[in-house]
Image 1 (cartoon, rainbow, N blue to C red):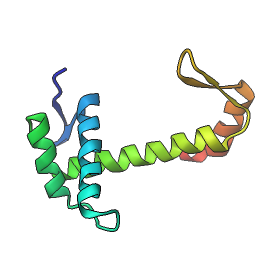
Image 2: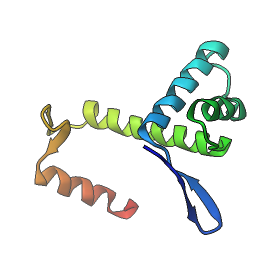
Image 3: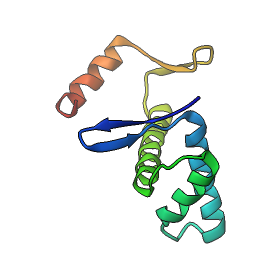
Image 4: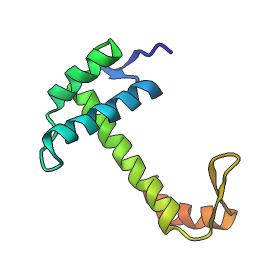
Amino acid sequence: MASSTSKEGNKEIFQWTYEEMVILCETCLQYIAKHGRAQFFVWKEIQLEVEKKIGRQCGANSCKYKYDTMKNEWRLWKQLKTSETGLGWNPITGKIEASDEWWLKKIEVHNGSL
């Protein structure tokens, strides 16, 4: 699947495919294996390695932003699956199931942040 960049104002936004996100994650894991967890990522190094693997330019900021976004989404997902009560898991659809009452409580709690 070909991916592209889209323009938002004067800024180009890199559009990640699923395969490219996997490559980014694998590259970050390789970086950690090589440099250790205590080291900060040098995003320019990761960018160059990712670009070599995907065959197009993505930018160091794009790599960092995507990594940070995926990390935050993973934390939310993990919290949702392990900490929330009143939820079910549907193995057929691969989705979390929640009652209307649960959703109403969440919307009420987070109304200001929407």
